[in-house]
Length: 517
Image (cartoon, rainbow, N blue to C red; front, side, top):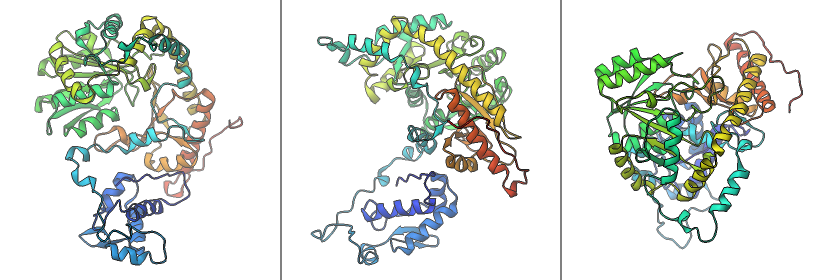
C-alpha cells in the first residue's frame, strides 16, 4: 500500500491518508478482508504522528469502508457492507456481470523479507521533489545542470551515433568498455592509485558498486562497520541485505579509530565502509594521520575497507588528501568512484577498483543484474575524457561550487538566528547544520515546506536514531541569489519555531535588505 503525502497542500494530512486509502478500497486495490498496517507502523512509514493515522482510520470507519477491533487491527469491510455505505453513489467495486468478483493479487503477500527492508521514504521524496514549482530545494546532492558541457557532449554523440557504427549499441563486456577502463587507469594513476584495466569494473553509478559488494560479501546477520552519520544510500543497501550495521562516531578528523579498534576487537565485520574525503553529509575530511591509523587497523584485523570517493575532485581550497586506496600497500581497500558528482548523473557511470580475483566475482554478480553498463554511454564518456574535456571541466565547476558554498555561508551568517551552527567544507556539496537547542528537524520540515524550501533531516544519515537536531544543505544546484533567498526562507522557518511559546524563546526576525527574487 503506497501513499504519498503532500505537505504543501492545505488538505490536512489525516484527510490525505483517508482519501488515498478510500480510493484504493473503492478501486478494489485493497480487497475485502485486507489487513491495514498498524497505526504506529504506518505513521513511521509516512513520517507523521500516530494520531494522524488514528484520525484517518476513524474517518474510514465512519465511511463504512473498514472495521477496527482492539487487538486485531483494522481490515477492509465486506463487499456488502461497502456497497451499502455507497448507496446513492455511482461508484462500484466490480462489474455487474461478475457474480463472484476476482480479487486482485495482494502483492505484499508475495514480497520477501528483503523487500520489507528496502523502504527509504527520504530518498524517494528527495527525487520526487525535483522540479516542484516555486520550491528551493537544498536536498538533492547533484551537479548544477547549467554547468553540464552539453555542447561538447552533443558533438561527441553525433560522431559516435552514426550509420554503420553498430558496435556502440552492441552487448559489451560485464567488466566494462576497455578504452574507458584504460582512461581510468591513467586518470587514477595521476591520483596515486596504482591500478590496471583488469582491476577496474565499470558500474551503473557507484550505488551499483555498493549493491554488488553487498551481494558478494553480505549474508543476513553479517556485520558491516560504517562511520555515523553516513551516506543514506549506503545505509539503505546495507539494511536491505540484512546486515547488522555497527557505527563509529566521527570528530573533526573523521572516523574515530579508537572506537573502531574496540569494535574490531569484539566483532569480525565483512568490511569497513567510509567516505574519507568531503564526507556526505558532514563535509568532514579524514586527516592523513587518521587515514594511516584506519589502514593499520584493517591490516591488523585483516578487514577490507570500502572507500567511497565521489567528491575528492571537488576541492575548493587545497588539493584533497591522498585516498585510502593510494596509501594502501597490501590490497585491503576497495575503491568506488563515479562521474555522477562531477559530470552527468543521468548517464549512471561509476567504477570499482579492486584486486583481480574480487573483481571477477563482482563482474559475475553484475551479469545477473544488468549484463553490463550501457555500451553507448561508455563510448560517449570515453571520447569525452580522451578529448581532455573532463580535465577542462573540473577547474570550472570547482570555481562555481566554491562560489555557491561561500554564498550559502554568507547567507547563513546574515540570517541565521541564535543557536544555528554549521560546518564549512573544503570540498564536496554539503553544509551540515545543527539546529538551535530543543528544535527537531522533523518539526522544521513542515514549517519549511510552508515557505517552499527543502532540506534533508539529519536522522536520514543515522542507522537507528540520532541526528534529530541536524540538517544537511546542498549548495551545488542553485545560483547565489537563489541560495540567499532559500536560506532566508529557511531561517525564517527556524525563527518562527523558536518564537513558539513552548520553546520559551525571545522573538527574533531574520533580516532581508533586498527584494526577494
